[in-house]
Length: 338
View 1 (cartoon, rainbow, N blue to C red):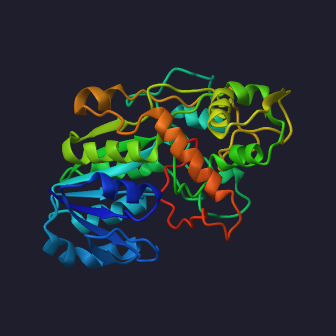
View 2 (tube, rainbow, N blue to C red):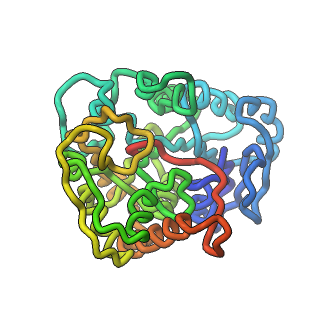
């Protein structure tokens, strides 16, 4: 299969390239990353100018386009306009942040807490751009919303489109360093980590980066048109359990100290979430569709995945001139909570 990947050089994208073994790959990206995947064809450019690359895309004769980084509706529409009439299929990487439950967590969506796992047909948010109310001025998340991106793809009647909805993705190379706020104090030998009571009970869907990449590859290979697929580990953990599991890998002898809710003390290490986050709302995702319909299973077992992620976080916590330091370039992350 010939696959054109829009992106593909960031955190998740590099893992996707590794997972696509046996396929002929071409990557469209800005050429700004320091570790471009080898043995692939590269088109260097800005996705805002993607339409100008139509003839070069046509020459590649891709069977499918994988859009790793659609931030919003206009982002998706640029890809659609550039490949329509050339490519029959598109797969877009989205996020669990599309669901109504994420809006409740953020405080941007009205309604009661619902802690049942989100299925692909669960209600989506009714209020777009959930980060804007928490931004003093336009920033990286100001125009971020995967709902309009998904809508643009599903409206493209001349393209067969599938969507992959990712949870919080963790592992080596994570540019958001999601494990570091827990690993660093453990390595420093701190006797306790404070955590708010409600935050300690919070459950968040997760996926190790290589497993998320394998799921994306499976949808590229066999995803049905007009279908969305959730990705998440089978077992979710409370934030308290997550910290304790990390501590067991580190060999930390300390304890988590629960404190009353309020203030800035002891929040889950998800940097995009505001101080007003309602952690009574969990972010769980049902992944039975991709497992049942496409035969997806994790390629890395949970314990091995956590050990690998903790080792990477420990290396990232070392001094900059340490042999274990590994600079990270590229931010193809699934967004918060996700």
